[in-house]
Image (cartoon, rainbow, N blue to C red):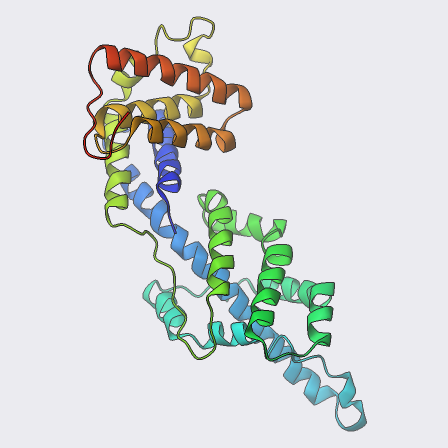
Length: 312
């Protein structure tokens, strides 16, 4: 789920906080960074459980309607299409999802059912559902496409939902696009009769170590790394450099100098890509220029020592 780029973004946030606070110890910020990484999976569980709760609400609404409409009024009962969706059934019955929630002592949406109610109403009144419910089918593919459609077009874009999640955890704003993309892939893998398999937080156990090492080495060498930027900005006062740009410049330098297995070009490309989302277009050009000048200086001083796959 978490790629190296996403880990760099989380490190960037932690370094930014360090630069603001300058604490004597790193323990609390390291806890913040570690929590930020693990909370990405918690957000994923929130979104999965949101679908489960919508499915549960559909059944509750149906049963209530059954009690109200009997005999000749039975035709007024709401469609069971949402209840009988095979993907939602698999998610609702999944031991893996239940165990993951239990392990983390999570009960998402229990106290915030208004979000479930509102999204449920939006779904059953949307043309996506109307078309889906009007064309009965036993196809798991159809059910997958429907769930992905309501997720990507109704649930994920909902501003009130995003505001709620941001209030729950401030780092979730940055995780939201990643988790929503992961949800689409996850839904496509749900099969009838097969246990739901939750995605791994990271693909490689070394990735967490990379993130922690990058944070520690950047903050421990912060002043030294920033000193190298002095004199590299003839047309720009260093005090006017946006702090987030400064953090990216220092993190990139740190990778150039202290991570021998990571190619220079890979580090450079990663921070330029990150800058697209966290800086202005002018900042991206500026960051590229500064890092290019720093690289030339490092190479001249023979400070770049890459091994294995880590080449220039």
